[in-house]
Structures are given as structure tokens and as C-alpha cells.
Length: 626
Image 1: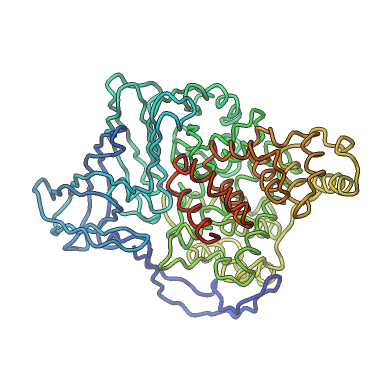
Image 2: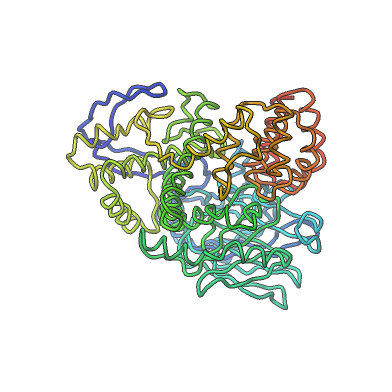
């Protein structure tokens, strides 16, 4: 959609491109200009027609693996458009009615990445548009699981993943992050199964298989979510709880014991939680990402269930999205860092409050390592390492790298260090409050930052060097680094090991997951078989139940051709669908001919276990290297 806004360009600067480690020369531009920015990833005409409310009435056919029903949009045609345009992707449109009267419609030819625009004639007074439809076989948002692909292996399961632009594959909608609407839904599922949405949710199975939902706070389409399966619920406290398959519910409840405390900690930092309940659903293994911040119900990977609560910083991240992302949303996917950079920063502040500074410092340092890796992979001068992205003509998922997460959060950390934590916290609290339930672009944020924090402080402006962060590539020279207190001790033990100290003599007592990750990540590119065996005999990495550690270890095993780990790696790849783990492991295998053969064998066995989004990623890896 189009977004028009006046920008006092004193906050925006002309710039010259910089190399990694350099800074930009800036020239203030003191004029005022009218800037138009279009969301290039929606085919809808939400710039002309206001989408106010969605009434969804659907049935989930687990046998046919299809959703069918109707979507009724309440609109305001305040700009007198003659046509309503909606985003669709592989939807079968049966019929359309405007204000109760059936009408004609046109489904345009598909556009790469974006799907097909559904065009419906409307008049100035049109207020209600109803579309009857069915989902297609290539619905990217939908993961249909047979019983064997679930944890308990008794009933089929369905879940959605609508971010970034996949809501259009199960609902005809205006699918852009800058387009917010309320919704109500009636969902019919097979008896005995529970349905959940990003809304007010049931806590018990309905005898009839019919469920009703309401979301009275306007949200964008990418936060539309649905899960259907053999699901049960356990409460954590008065406003938090966990859903999971019966065989996972006790483990999940134990792992998320501190969810209520996290909510209270977040509120102490940046104001009240505004969404009512905060619940978590632990999905079957094929879920392609760590977590998805669907309002009121975080969708979560089972890979965080480590048995020792060591990986629940992911929940702090998804909870933080209740402020940065869900409350204040990036206007377009080119502004994605405004969601994820803020959330990464907020997550680490929650973690610091709950676990202490030295613990949070480890998260910052691991994040910096991820930042370094992605810059090296993309190239230090790559346009894709800017915070303000340019994804025109591309899949918006191309921008879902560590750049918006880590470059964004480190930029905010830099601001905090330069203005002081108390002042920066006041700024963020004001920012979240004044932009609540609204969208914001990068340009608008920079104006807000200038007006409310930088003001006339030219020294501060020079120290921040905003252009190097937002409109420049690579890692800026003023990028902050966290304290290394705990990792220095890890480095010492790694050096001992590499200088032939026996693994059994290393001092590793009370190490957390983060210390182990730092220990393994910074090993030489390929250890010897003897070194791998010594580590494995002492620390049992091949048999670990910690998915973060397992993935790093299996990548090391492939490099070292440490075959004793291969059977466990095969099992890991059969039961994990998270792209964060799949991509580096398949990516490492395809670097050698033998590894390529192994990758194809394993992928052929387990491809159906992975979400369509993950399948697409691995298909590219195998095709590129094959």
C-alpha cells in the first residue's frame, strides 16, 4: 500500500557507501520533502479501500488437507474506488458477493512471489464483500501433518505460518504488515481435535468440533494464525499457559515455568502488556522457525524443550514482539529491522533482568558472531547488509537474515550506550506508547529518533553515525561489543584442549548452553577424528538433547567426517524442521561429493516432514550445489 508522510529531512542524510569497518561522510539536507513509499509485496489496493474487519467462516478438512469456507470483509470505500483488490496465492475462488448480491470477479495471472490479485467490482457505498473459497495444494502457509509426523503419532495436525506474505494462501486478504484489521472466526474441525488462533482461545476440546474466536485489536495479516490437532492445555499462572500434544504437555509446562515472570519483567521495562493472555503452543517438530509471535498465542518449536530451561530466551524474544512488532509494526518488509532489531534488544534486556548481565552479555556476543557470519556470507559491501532493505521484485523472505536482528539490535545498543540506559528506556517507553497499534517506516522512525532523543546534539549525532547503520553496508566501525567475562574463560579451556589437554581435564562445570556454543563455534574449521572422539567421549555431544548444541556438533561432524555421529544426525534431521538448524547442516553436507550424496539421501527421506517454507530453502541449497 502507499504511505504518504512529510519528513523534515534534517534527520535524514545524504551518504556515500562505506566498506566494512569504515564510516560514512554525512551531509545534512535541511529541506522538507514529500516522500511516498509503497509496500511492493501486496497486490491489494489498501491505499484506496480501508479494510476494517474480517469475518472468517471455515472448515478444516484434515483428510483432504484443505480449508474451505468464506471470508467476509467489512470495508470503507472512502476514496470511491471502483474495484476491490485482494491478495491470493493458490486459492480457488468459488464465488463473490458484495453487500449480499453475487457479482463477477477476476483472478489475475500469478505474479512471481506475490500470487494473484483478486479483483471485485464495488461502488462508493459498498461495505461488505464476501468470498467463498478453498485452499490449494501449494498453500505456503499450511503444514498438514499425518499422525506419524506428530509427536504422539495418533492424530493429524495442521498449523499455519503466515509471515511474511503467506496469509494470502489461506485467506483472501490485504496481505501487508502496514494493513491492520480486527477479526472474528468460526472454525469447524473434526471432533476430538482442538482449534486455536491468534485470538481469544479455548482451553478445552469442543464436543461439536466447532470453535469461535475474536481478535478485537487490529492486527496485520501476517499475524493471522491457526493450529488444529490433538492439543491439551496447562495453566502457568493467571494469564499465561501452554498448549501441546498430550505427550509433550508436562515437559512443555516445566520448560515455560517462568513465562508469567517474563511478562511481568517486560512490563517493568516498557509498559503494560496489552493483549490480555499470553499463551504458548508447542508445535510438532516440522515447525520451520523458532517461534512466531502470533498475538495471545506464541507458536513455538519443540527444539527449545531441552529439559533444563536453557533455551527459553526464545520465549523472551516472542514475548518482546508483543511490544515491538505486534504493538508497533514495520510498515513494509523493507523496514523489517524495526520489528526484529527492537525485539532482539528487548529480549536481551528481559534476559539481563532475569539472569544477570554476564548471562545477557553472552547472548550479545553470540549475536555479534552471527552478525559477523552473515556479513561475511553476503559480502561486506552487499546492499543486503543495510538495515533499510530493498526487496522490490524479490521474495520478502530474502530479507529474513541476521542483519535486521543483529545489526538492528546492536544499533539500539549503541544508542543506549551513548545516551544512557535510563534516558533510552524513557525514549522506548514513549515510542511504544505513542505508536501503539500503528505502523511505522524507517524514515518515520529516524524523524522520531531525531525529534525525541538526538534533537540538537551534534556530538551525539556524529557518534551514532546513523547512515553507516541504516543506509550503509557491513559492520559499522562503532559497533558495540558486550563484556567477554564468561567467554574468556571458555576461550581459555578451548585453547587448552587444542594444545593437547585431555577433554576430561577441562574446567566446564556449570557451563550454560551459551558457553558450550561459544566453545564449539570457535573451534578450527575441521578437528581431527581423534579430537572429535575425545570431546564426544567426555561430553556426549552426539547424544545431546539440546538442539542448539546438536546442530553445531553435527556440522562439525560433517566437516571432520566423524561418522559415529551420522546416525544421530540422521535422526535429528528426521525430527527437526527448524530452518535455523536445517540450512547450516544441509549447507555443510553439500560442500563435498560424498556429503552431497548423503544430503540427497537424507532429504529424500524427510522432506515431507518439513514445512513448505523449509522445503523451499533446502531445495535451493541442493539445487545450487548440485
